[in-house]
Length: 212
Image 1 (cartoon, rainbow, N blue to C red):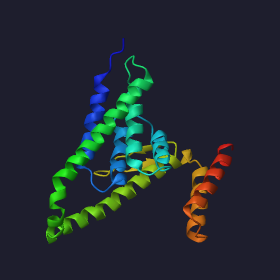
Image 2: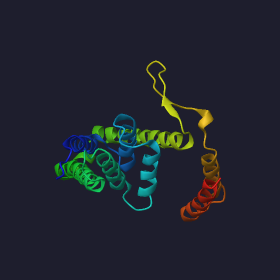
Image 3: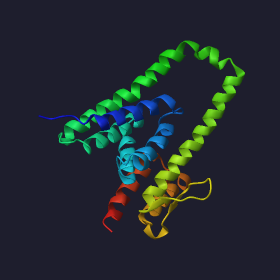
Image 4: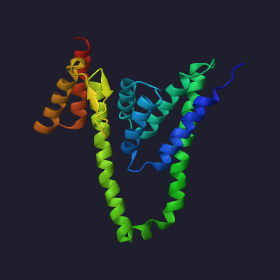
């Protein structure tokens, strides 16, 4: 007889419901907060696994819900308390799906009748423009976080007064990552090749470099 561990499912439900309620700016704004909390805060998965989740999600449309379910699945499967990993993981993914979508739909139903009125308010429009600008910074933060985690094996948060930046150990540099970045940059920015060709070339090069 299996007994579900309610603690981890409760943590998953609370985390993703808060995430869906208070984050603005689309999928990548949500991912910035989720990635760091899931890895550093809860310890549900490693930074490398979080990068795998994002890479997996980018292979299809709709990256947000795929990444959140991936995180919820692993978090629950690794704390099954005697329950089979697949069963517990499926429960975690289901809770994640529910907790992510319900607050979003509540926001839509509550705000939809007033969208036109909100756009007509200059002060509120300025506030929304400021949020848009802030979202760009959040996405940049996500890009830097992923870049550091993928490029270096050891990245730690250091204290510098009120600042707590991520500082990598340069001796743990994976040289293959800058090589792939340089190739992708040359193909897209210098040679003006499309994304499909760039992805194909980098994927093939990545497979070759993985054998080194």
